Length: 170
Image (tube, rainbow, N blue to C red):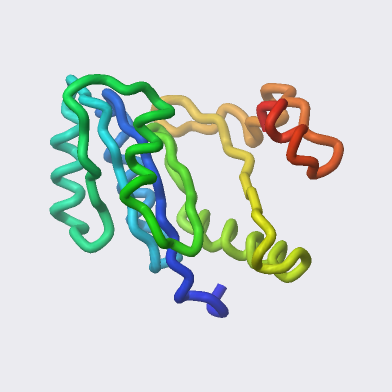
């Protein structure tokens, strides 16, 4: 993935009481093989140690991790992601992260490569949505299923049609 190391990726994360898994996810993002990214986090007024974990990781990676402004009350997931996204303006690509994920080290490289391939087919001005399957694990990251899509019997769109992506859990 050396052809476009300059593309800037904004990673957007909404956090709420995620202390059990948050540090592991933040460390997995920090360990990405792709290096031109910035993580924007919005914390929805967590009552656990999430904020302290974010502050500690932001101190370790000040050029990479930003905590966006928070309201004094809970706004819910949608508004929390929206708040994080407000701080992430002007980037080439956007990736969204849940607080309890753990990313494979090459996730950004793999998704960016796929986006570049689709841009070559459809043009750079065509909006793109790229997503990936995931491994299902227990709390200790022991793999329970190699594929979330297969294990949950999700109905995938028969074609890449926007309406189907909006109606189905892909």
